[in-house]
Image 1: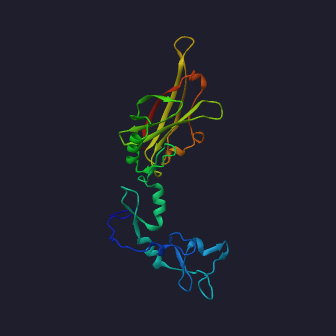
Image 2: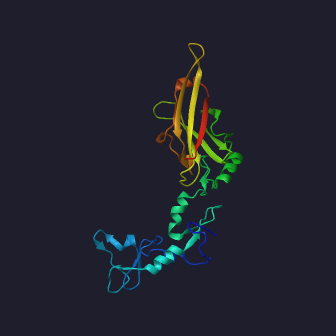
Image 3: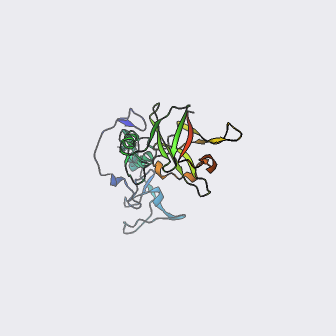
Length: 267
């Protein structure tokens, strides 16, 4: 059994009604320190005080009274109860009152399909298979530190980039801006949780058609830290750093020629 703390701890699997570990007032999982009234009724530390300077009175006791006594026995139970993360492939047993926090950062939490109105949600490995087989979205393989040239249709500026080195998927998405530029492009790393490493940096640039004098070409370029999201289809282009491709670089074309390089940073 893999635990979040000491792997040598002596643990046994038991079945129980986990709602008994919830605060009867706010209904959230109890977190140490836990307090009780003279009648033995429990409350979490947040519910103990009704408002600053005014301690909550127990409504279950006939004579009332505050939650003045620290229940260290219940604290010990709360610190010992562990439940398995429900995310497929994780297998980590987490202290029950920390489960929600773990799920928010678990690297194996399900990710959502970036295709609008699809609704599919699953582990990253399954998501890649889903996108490549169910949707007509282009999928390109990319190597870190090397430039990849892409032809992105203006009518549907979205595609998937897959790095075989660490099986990471990146979602390239474009959108129309209110400021008059036909397209703004950014890259999102599809991954759950808030893993600090590795970081990814993307360099994006677009070249326009040959101009005058002969052989000259206009270009725009941007370097951005790649944002991570388990719901890449819901990312707002205008809230992040993006590449803006002005009208003169398109010259009436239906495709925008993009170059992209993604660098992997491990420190």
